[in-house]
View (cartoon, rainbow, N blue to C red):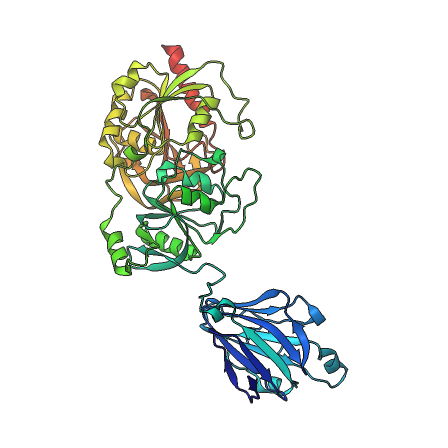
Length: 542
């Protein structure tokens, strides 16, 4: 249709192709495009001559559910601007959430040298305001006759055109009533878990496969996740045990020489939910102030916010035995050592071989690799393995491993530890440390938001050194409840909590954190050598 307007707004119909011919002296043309529409400016003419003929499409502006694009890559050296304030020569970005965007096409006419040079230049503005905010800027422009042909693509055939990017399709509902909308990746559905934050800068695959995260949603405070993809070598167990992954930005590409798969595909195959484009910083601050919260992740539109909130308020992780679901079902031998390219203490080796029985409460592969690298022959047994059967194996030492959840929820494990204490050298890590604390008569308590990350400072009280450690636990041992003879060997410098124990008379040692790291620094790696020395001295004395 032919249109002669005076400051008139043209509404574009997304169900058909339209052609608008304008004959103006100076007024701008305003075309408003709405959400979930796509408008391709196929052709623009000035004085009935092609100013731009579209051969390819360039995405010019993004808005709520739609795309505005204009054809041509630089024919006639056309200049394109994106202005957030609607003023001539403005700068900025169009609103990503505005329900409509106004598009201005202004062609400068002839005049002095400057204007003659600008005759072939088209200025296309994208703004969230319907008109230019400076009337004097409008009057300074002279617009000649030109043609704009708009094509709505497949919308003209009655077919809905999807947005070119993923829209929010998931919700995280916390028990405090807050609702966080996000985009999903990995598996879909509805899942409930305890939300904790992890401050590690890298190592998300090791975190995904750490059994200690069973029943939890892990929120990564590092905003950019997925850029190195995944590979089989970095797995800490045979499957993913965490309930879900919460991140700020999901990398759209991977770049690592060991990468075999994208993070999204990896989670999909393992039925693990993930969300991104959510304010992880705000959620982290909430967790620090209020403590760990139960949350529900859902991609199901059929479930209301109220239903998800009720799920979060009726589920609890305290007192639940999570160890039995992550432990192995029968004993097996472990022989794999740390690869030479990752071994930081390969010069500290013992000619003797020590047999270690490792209780699997959710053990990480790299704990076993480090023990093997320090000269240990390892037999891994289930969490319910009787102490009597362990002692029949005549081990040189026993390892009580890391694991998920509340140590008070597994009294059978505490009894096993009690039956072994004093009979052979013992090393406890994380959950094993807490079980030792209870078995010695001490108490454990749930922390406000726990320790999760690879940057926790710990002081070794025996020599005064400070180690940067990798930690992952929501419970701690109360040192005031421990009997005499038990020595607190390490303290977390962030909050003063107990990070290590020793009881020389009972030949035991333990750490609340992870000396194998994976991911994390290797400051505490030599503790494996200390355990080997403990077994060697016991072997020599007997």
